[in-house]
Length: 194
Image (cartoon, rainbow, N blue to C red; front, side, top):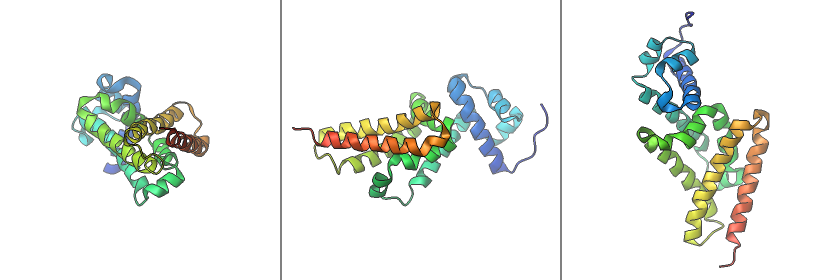
């Protein structure tokens, strides 16, 4: 392996987190080794272990990085602002910046017991915003609870599916389409005769 340039610690950690996210997404947590992460990053296994104590520590760092960046994207935005802009427009740039990690956070982490807490935290934030926005349209508590879970899952699944197949140049357009669709669902759910 050719020597890699020496990077400042935070830059190296970021490089390893990105490489690990892609490796974990490709082979899954259980089948991914620290050697694979090192190879994906173009560094030695020793460098990976200098930055992360274990594979679990590294996977947790992958999830936490995208969760922190999502928190920063929502920071200072009211529920009304998120509803007006569309949650997809707020989430999409972060998801695109960390496509593998974002998909791991939504699709895979909840299935891994050591990381279920992080997945639950993310799903809790999704539900918090979905509920606050949908409560303006739906006054039936049972329907609101169902709609919160359904709309939140639709939002994040739609973004993940776009990351799988979509053209990054069309991210803003697709975020708008997701938001329009969610608004239509909210309107339909609020107008059903009881």
